Length: 225
Image (cartoon, rainbow, N blue to C red):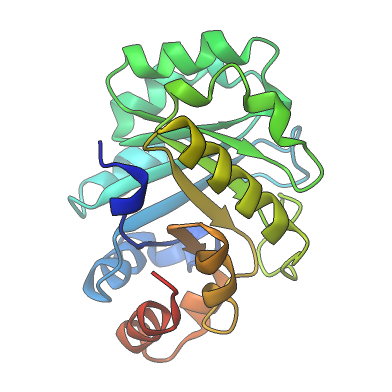
């Protein structure tokens, strides 16, 4: 894993905002646009007030691309579904600290399945919950909206949290990546990357763009990295 000062910008369009009736084509759209990851938001209707899809859908779209699948589990009791998502084709699995009674155990369950592991924090969740797992993580996902729906307004106050996390990672000498998700587009990608994020999720803005590749190019142009 790279040292923190060598981390590269990675763009991860979220299929939450895709046309579900042609999901395979939408994944190819992400690939053809030159993005780095496919971000897959899994919602259960309990941890968040919306329901999306499960392992069968991930398995189906896995057949359409070799891109990295960045699977974000916004679900209660994620430990019950980890193996199913790995078998379906997940490359990175991120769980919410708020949904995990035994966070350390779940982090190591994911690692033992042979994929990268991330932990996500809602906007109001303090960074201190990561104190005893940060060394084990490949990525921390800081939500820049309250999870559950696409198209929400970006919460700028989270930038302070990004900076504090980046400093903690730097001081510890870890290689942990910082991902951000929620309301990010060409206008504010500079702010979140300057604060320290390098993995950028964009859903509504990506799929609303008439020129997908042009959008990705503009995101890279406007990023601070």
